[in-house]
Length: 320
Ligand SMILES: C[S@@+](CC[C@H](N)C(=O)[O-])C[C@H]1O[C@@H](n2cnc3c(N)ncnc32)[C@H](O)[C@@H]1O
Image (cartoon, rainbow, N blue to C red; front, top):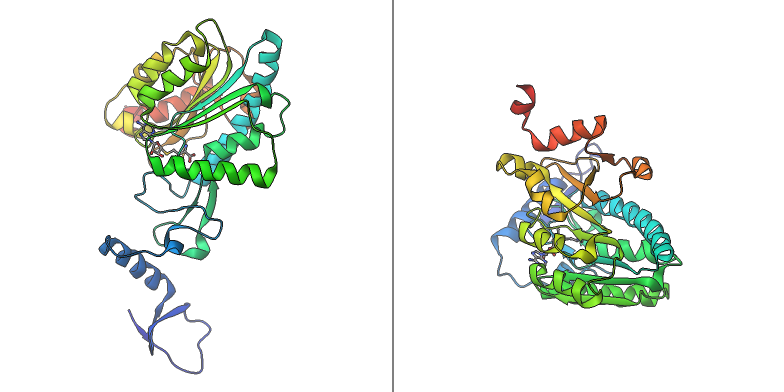
């Protein structure tokens, strides 16, 4: 709805935008129109500033394959807690048992990006550090840093190029030392993830660390099956970001999907949003009391059973 501009200015009226001389529309409507225009003209020429913000980070919008939404920010902050905890424990365990540490992020994305929500604008953009940068933050000051081998994999070349750029910015701005290996691999994780593990660790080695699997569509059964068979990953925990509702609505059994990881204990993080996204940690350690501090619960504890029922059974099934 267009509203005519009239003097004196009415301060109670909603903020307006001038679309043409003398034609003002409420701000939210202008933003909506701009978002619709963007969708209508997919072939329209875009300027660099439409694609990158002033940090030089790519701007990610709904429909982009990073799979971003309004909760991605808090998801990545949760990842930081998890990484901090894992880095400190794994560093100490590896030193005790004379082993190395590893992080393998099988779906790394561009590293850092700027999220613009569907009806957002440049003022509402949120810079988000993805799992790779969060991990480096967690590792930066840890004494075990030189003992870590780190691999990042993504199937999209542009994400790998962006990540390389973010890693180089990170190094220049923090002057932090880098782990002993830092690989960015462009390719399919079903092939490159098991390959990376076997190239870096012999069959007799038992490193400590994390495999991170954060795919838009949920758990990839082929990938977890292949990784679960590697003896090198016996002491490595699995960190999965799971849109749990997708599995129950599609009548897929989450236990069957998790089983090939070969982990006996699953810890569940807080459940978020319509798709019931949550971080899940698969481990072989029977006791993980420190996870309670970051609101993670064992799936077989009373609180965990409640969360487990929520993510594996529909509302009707729970009421029956
Ligand atoms: C949800 S995003 C991951 C975001 C990342 N963890 C972060 O925090 O920024 C999923 C990523 O998986 C990548 N991907 C999808 N299928 C893949 C495959 N088969 N192998 C490797 N990467 C894949 C996509 O290109 C996308 O960047």
